[in-house]
Length: 368
Image (cartoon, rainbow, N blue to C red; front, side, top):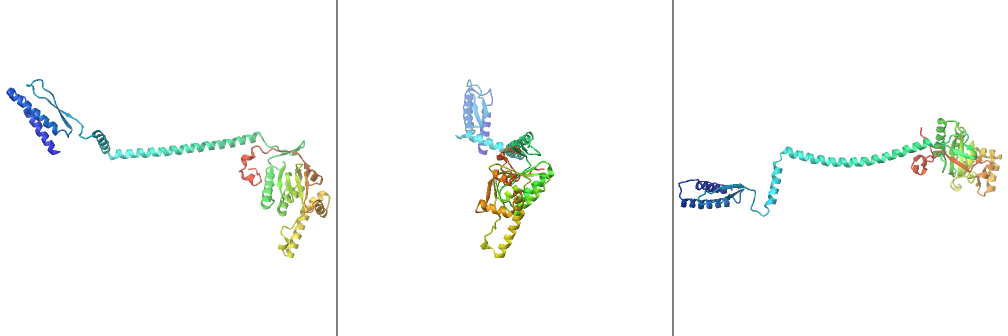
């Protein structure tokens, strides 16, 4: 490169000398100078072909006119892909020209753009969740408004013109009667008494096969000593311990086709598994529970416990005495048969509340 520059300087100097204007030169010398200048210019063009300088020569009007030369700067190169390489070199040079602060600023801008995109995505998700929460809240508000518009009927006398009106002071007693069931039922009775001791409480039995004597006895004791009257309502089946609860309620109601079933107490464990003294102890305990729980029912019927048990076996060889509510009313197992029961506390769709733990447990306790 240095060698080419040196040659370029030489030829430019020679060109300047031979093109120097002089009136003393004769016409032959002027022609000779012109020829030399042509040659020098050609050499300069050759030397500058790989450089950024391109020599252009103006054509003289006459032989006597001095030759005029012009230097033109260009970015042309002698390669087929000169344009592409030129663009790449320019881009690289632009990047190289950026100072460290500018490069750091560009990185910060790229990072901020990425963070902004992530934040926009999170905002979109939160907006969607917010919309869902608003819909749920609106649904709860509509339920509350509906409950305010459609309030349960609180009547001191719930039987009106042959229709039984059940308020939201209701407790469901379904399935096996055990200690857990007794605890829930009795706590609910205490709760409704503390809330209001005037309006009746409804113990609703849709279907129960009975259960443990101690648990049933606990329900009967709390029910009979409640300040607010506890009314038992049978909709489908009440058997064994459930039937005893119905008979000992302060007041009981049943659909005409509801089934009431009484049977004598039995030893739940096979005799072959027990020693003789255990059999005697269990028999004595069952007799004691029978006297305590069946005696009030028999007394209500106007007979003794022995006569009650005898009639059980007379109606069925296994001792299961089952009667529809219409006949059970005559036997004083149930007080009132009613064909129209109005559940005024159902102000929302029960299917929508199927996941409510209060409904799953069978006890509907109003929150304070």
